[in-house]
Image (cartoon, rainbow, N blue to C red; front, side, top):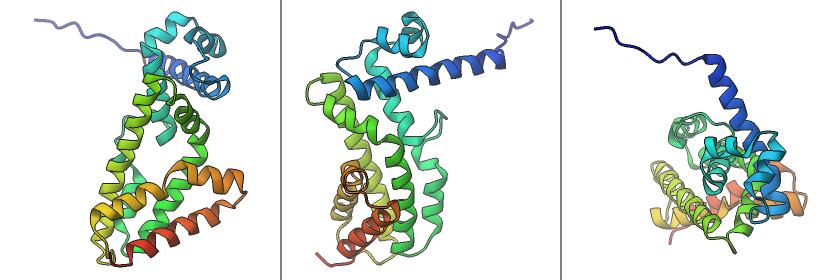
Length: 211
């Protein structure tokens, strides 16, 4: 029996992907200024140059748009690749020694913060007054804590970590908070290289000192 297979045009796939990217870019601008609460989806649609029905068709809701925007700015693309499978994670795992691993992570962290600072800080502000934004902010915090727990386990395998894995995860989670980057680099004008050294020196000092 013949089976009818649905043909998916590569050209249409690329057009859909570009439309999604255009809407995300528009949301990134407007959710920062004038802000998430002050930006209806009609405004995002107008900024993106598409019909509001298109925004709903692609994202379904304003909350989903914000959530996807946070995810995309975190990783820098919309590829369906889990964080644990990203190349920087493989780089870190291949290294030996506490400081080399922290140094590679610090470079990744600075690159990520530079890309997502405006969006994440806007999310943090919106979370104080909007339930959807608050839920996404909480998920972001929890996801980062999970990631740092995994990183702490990798660092512990070096034999150079002299604190508990839980404390190591707490220290990493605090040190990688985007508000540190915002204050030191964007407000105080530190060169990125100095921020990276601060991260490595600070975390290594605590993890290498017994509880």
